[in-house]
Length: 153
Length: 153
DNA sequence: TATTGTTATACTCTATAACTATA
DNA sequence: TATAGTTATAGAGTATAACAATA
Figure 1 (cartoon, protein in one colour):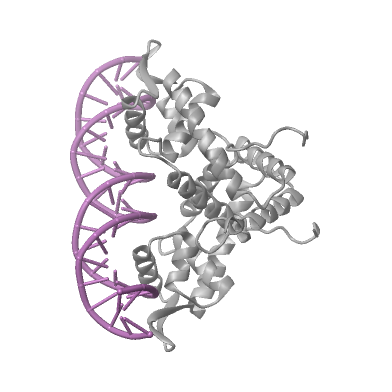
Figure 2: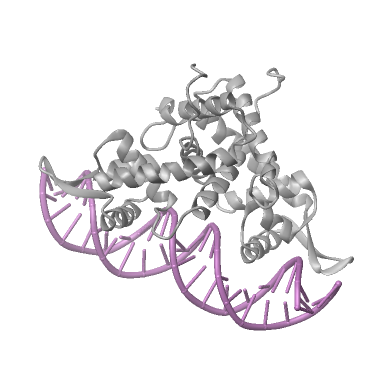
């Protein structure tokens, strides 16, 4: 591979977008009735990784409007996967938390996702997949909560 | 990096999804009124890369429903970025093609996208970006037109 | 009969604005 | 006054079904 070529500016994001579409389409195709949606998966994953958080933080991470977060959490709460409770320190806030049922559902969904992902990434070696994963991880963890680049401020 | 660890099955696709969201959100945020949408960009890019094609092929590449392709092409045709004409060999088919205006608009949009992408990927070195690009390219080019993995058939 | 594209329609996702309750 | 969350509503994005033209 020729690393001296100019950077592929502007041509990587469309690939990411395309792959993301293919990914969640395949995930939804593998879903049985009652399985969680790919949006629910993303929110539950966030709650698992970062622990309890306010709705506003969820909004910031995904760049979603606050009203959408309300609807998303209503779905999750109806299905018993997450709970909202008032923050005693500031009663305007809702602390959102994963339930045990949510943890179990999440594990189940990741088992399904692992199969889907394995198929989609089948042209990559195990080493390639790790490299891809870590590159994406570096990109995402360097971004500030409001969705812009952390270094930009 | 420890390449001997088990493959990160099921944990890469959510990162891809998240990055894709952040990417087109940033692109749309940088858009002036009248600029093309990120969906239009994807279709025009396809037409540029593969040349003229039937609507059904566009549908297959993106896994979109045929009716959505109709709407998308109506937008592009209204703005003079692409044209549809009947295929003389099979008059049911529409051959879709990029116009010169479409080519120019595409270049303009990629200039904008390059800035957005450069910001989003700022935590990666030039070499990292190439590696990411080529990994994604390998994943996407190994997939058959209908969206499933090419090796699966 | 089968296929390409279209229209009509509904359902999901997302954003804006006005509201409630707390601070 | 300002902030966290909610409701109502409208606009994209996407899918399904019935249809027209052509094969």
